[in-house]
Length: 147
Image 1 (tube, rainbow, N blue to C red):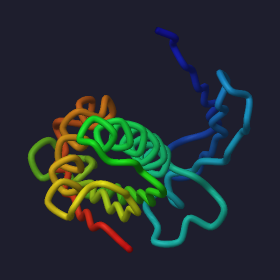
Image 2: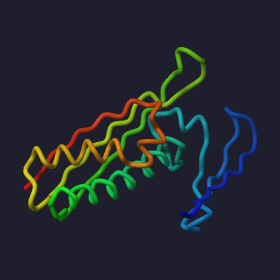
Image 3: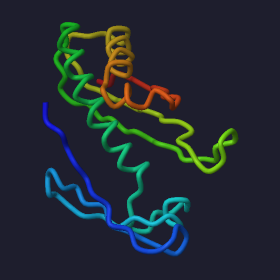
C-alpha cells in the first residue's frame, strides 16, 4: 500500500509565527497555518491540523461506509459526511488535545432500512482506518437515512 506525505514549513514562534502545509503526494495545494487562527473561532482563510484531520476522517469514513452498505445488501446513491474535530485544553498533561470528533452522515441508500443503515454506519465508524488511528479521541456518530 502507498505512503502519502505532507510537509509544513514554519517560520517564527508559536504565537507570532506562521507556516504553510503542502499536500506533497497529490500536489493539490499549499495552505496557510497559524496557531492564533487555529485557536480562534474564525479560521480567517487558514487551515489547521484539526481541519485536515476532519477532511481525512470524513473522506475515509465515506469510503468505508459505502463498502459496508454494499456488504449489507444496499446500494449507496449519495452520502454526505461531515466531521467536526474539536481542539481543547488537556487538563491532564497541559497544552491542548483533540477533545472530540462528531461524524454526521446523511445518506440516500436503496435496499437498507434505517436499522440496517445505522448498523453499517456504526461498523464504518469502528472500521475506518482514520477512526482506528484516532482511538484516543471520543468519536460520536449521528447517522440518518434520508428519502
